[in-house]
Image 1 (tube, one colour):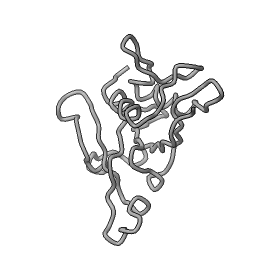
Image 2 (image 1 turned 60 degrees about the horizontal axis):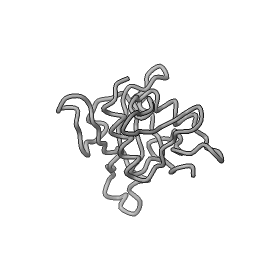
Image 3 (image 1 turned 90 degrees about the vertical axis):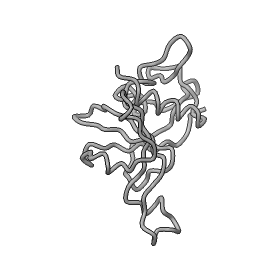
Amino acid sequence: MGGNCTNFTSQCLYAGGIVQDKVGNYTWYYTSKSKSASWKSANSFRTYYKNNIGSATVKGLNAKTCSLAKTRLGDLVQIVNSNKASHTMFISGYLADNWANDNPWEYKYDVKICQNSTGKSGRLKNVPLKSKGISPSSLEYIHITGSYY
């Protein structure tokens, strides 16, 4: 199921206050004894966030697919081909021209990402996403609204 990249982003979300979800058809959690597939697998995480809608008993992540323009600090980016996610990255900043000083998140032309992958070269901090050479059509941006409580 992979694990390094999405485990890293799941830990970032949890550290940021997102409530774990152990109830319902779609779960996202980590305990000392077990973790859900969505905690560590990019594609399982994609299935989770797209299907978790929250209810009186179901909690957890509230997230929606969005455009690059709508992303903010703490959102995620996934590499998706043929409707299958293979990698997850955490948005840690933006790149914007000087004229965008009043609202750089709105007028950014790229985001900076952090990621963790197997091997030292796969551990990146505040790297421009475009520098990774990924086709823009393979990128899916995920806006994190918060948690369902």
